[in-house]
Length: 341
Image (tube, rainbow, N blue to C red; front, side, top):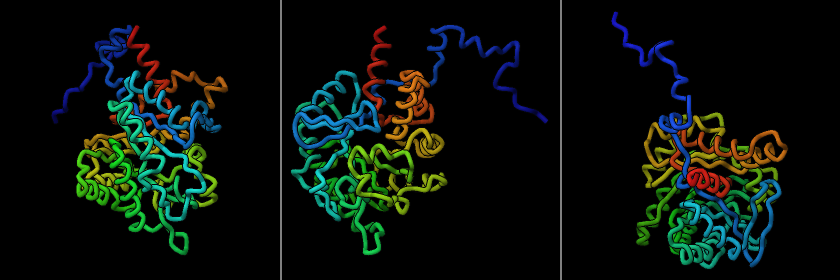
């Protein structure tokens, strides 16, 4: 029986360490690299002026009013970060069971989008399509009398929210709610209203993860959610095949890009999605991942810059075309400095 020749030379003819001997050789054969162009910077925006409120569970992350957000956008442009993702902190008095503020054309997000696109047209702006920052109960959808999240009525509201954002000039709408059929409904509405250039980045494989805690503190939905959870619409962490079905459905409904969330605990899902579909695929290094690395670095247990860059490179290696990360500014500065040397 003929056996295929080995794809490598056995030792001592083959010495893998030869390709690790010096910097130029390691640079020459490196398969994956990280660039500022791979980064999307999530930011938290709030009403008012000269408002900067730290998020205690996310060291280095602040809730900013628009006037303080504009210099951050300018820095993104200078560093080569292509996209900023907006997450609103809504006045509790505007939160209602139906989340109607989400589609207010004069609301916080449409106004911030318009200001950013006017000031920095070259910076991509992405918006979250979800109701949890706007609902008094903290869920991503409308509730029936038993507290169950209704799918189709929620999709109607999400579609109105996406249209309001698109009319304000946003480049990418990113539905993160995990309702069935929402990508198709949003795509059809965008087409019907002549908003054919608005891209959709679908949170296609979003898991009911324990890593979202600091984010919910940041947008102010944690207190509203209370002891409730989102397991009836976000995915079971024990499932992987289901993620492929979710991604396939979103692509068929008109998604331009797909996302896996969280990031590092789901690198296997990210890899499978990229290999299966070959679509523009993104990962979200979520608030809990960020907080975990920050806390370890602040305690002196890990090298901050080294683990930050290594964690981001892991996403690229697993197949991500880009990463949403709160480390975007720090990482881009380091990468720019390295390139200048």
